[in-house]
Length: 251
Image (cartoon, rainbow, N blue to C red; front, side, top):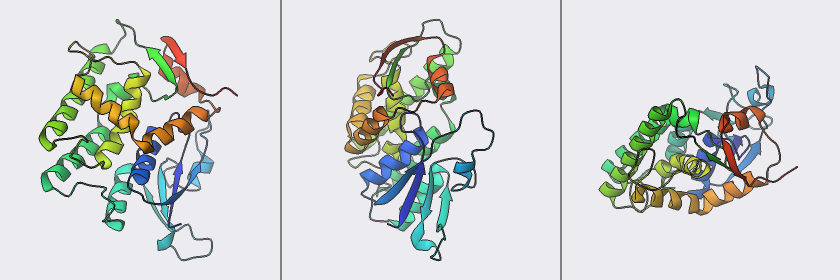
């Protein structure tokens, strides 16, 4: 196979999920290798063997290598991988064909890549858990602003380009980049409504479509089967909150 994608645990890794879901949704064949993160270790040696930043996802294009033990051409950072695949696989539909929709999709991907800091820190990705956020938590105003911006962005894309996906009729990189966000809404049981910290009916319906996509479902099923836990990640998710349910497989 031409492409080899390196990822980490599916229950936790939002950036791995984005590329994995995109490549599956766009029917780009690849092999995957899952490397488990070593907690309490400054340098992730196993990650460093495949990624210059010791971070995943990292893509190796074996068709661009010299053969033998060559790992091929290495592409790291999610946005760079997306653009590389769009060049290498122009018929895969990674970006919308319409100029305006494509510009919006790229902007939406860049925004989630660089923004939503409160959502990231207070709603950590943890697919198998259901956690209740307290009404008086520190940082709640910032989280609510991020949720409001997320809802506005989704409604803008759906309204401008007609849905059912963020930039039109076809599932593209813009949708893949927001699938992990939809899992966070589910994990932290964000409600539909018009109040602070709630999402519109349109936003919640779109989140449901993201979670219901075949590629998303396959990733989620794999994540729920994992028995390896990242203690630090779990602590970051819970932060003293009430855990309503844990759907992860037990060791």
